[in-house]
Amino acid sequence: MDELIFIQQDVLPSLMRGLKISLLLIIPSGVCGLAIGVLVGALRVYGNRWVKAVTNVYVVIFRGFPLVVQLFIWYFGLPHIGIYLSPYVAAVVGFALCSGAYHSEYVRGAFHSIKRGQRLAAQAIGFTTFGMITHIIFPQAFRRALPGCGNELIYLIKYSSLAYMITCIELTGEGKVIASETFKYTEIFFIVGFIYLMLTSVASFFLRRLENSLRLPGFDHYGL
Amino acid sequence: MDRVNDVLRVENLAKKYGQKEVLKDASLSVKHGEIKVLIGPSGAGKSTLLQCINVLVTPDHGRIWLEGREILHTKKKELHEYRQKVGMIFQDFNLFDHLTALGNVEIGLVRVKKMNKQEARERAVAELDRVGLKDHIAKYPAQLSGGQKQRVSIARALAMDPRVMLLDEPTSALDPELISEVLAVIRALGEEGMTMIIATHQIGFASDLASEIIFMEDGVIVEAGPPAKILSQAECARTREFCAKLTSLY
Image (cartoon, rainbow over all chains, first blue to last red; front, side):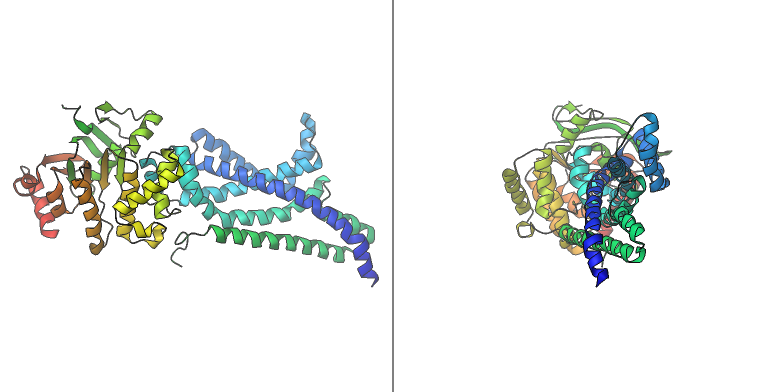
């Protein structure tokens, strides 16, 4: 009984406060990350030599550095050159840029999977390159990239927990604070884990619904 | 050199891939309502010639005139406008896979010609009706037969009001039974006076319809002339040999 009262009165309110911060981290990072990923993915396919080189370097760095190291650079490193970011802003910037690098891989693969004939047909009726990408190639590529990008969003939900490392106290951070006060690590982190599981389940549900609503007859069934 | 009366004229188009010359100084012209048929073995350069004509493949050199005006295809705006006036039909249809038959015909009108939606829809329905597909406008490419797909692609090209149509082996990817429905549509276009350049192996159809047959091999236009002459009394031995084989097959 005591346990339940303790959880209701002390644990849940803090965790809910943390959950709110987590959502405030995840949603803008997810949206910006996807936008960066689509843009960078497109540039890596359709850009000129220099644009390709610059965007490839971006992806190599942001996929190659551990995320926590990136966050440390944004939060602890930048002040040395006079740029001060709040823990929250540093976390969102770090998540969005890292997520964007991963998204761009899925998007690039999806762009490459669109047959050359689609491009030729669009050019043949007078589309500009930009019009062809936005109206013909992207609507198809987006459908192909969606499962991968969805996966990246699920990852983002979980790696948002790294924000507490740069003192942005979100769900995991709140959990750690109460756990160290009460020494009830097992119970509290089990609840924290369960809340992340709920978040990823809800995200998966909506991603699946989105995939289904975008499904077209005969597109991407690969003969199944 | 009657550049004024030609709908389309190309001179000395050439294309090299690495060391391989796939098109060597090809020149041809079509007048209004004429139908020129390109024949020749695979790899002869027929596709490359057609794709160089509307600059889907950038020719290494050569000049292009449409309705007496030279097209400077290095200028993007000019190129995009030129391509709207040159309809292209591909061997494997290349319908936009994410759009219905109607969407495929409509999108060029709305996005390229900036026509309003209502007008574009009416025009697209009319073009699909013209190729006998009024009952299939809501279907996606995967739900159409090969012949129907090719007819949608013809409707898509026609909607742009092309001055000339280029058809790159329009029936080569089709089952024998579906070939005739596509040929009927092309024949009807010819009868309506559409100017066309067609690469095909359908020699019977070609000899009925063509104003001139052009035989190509190894990237070179070997010989051109009226169907009767090319098919039975060609000057070049290689043309005679090729035509004899085609005639016995098709």
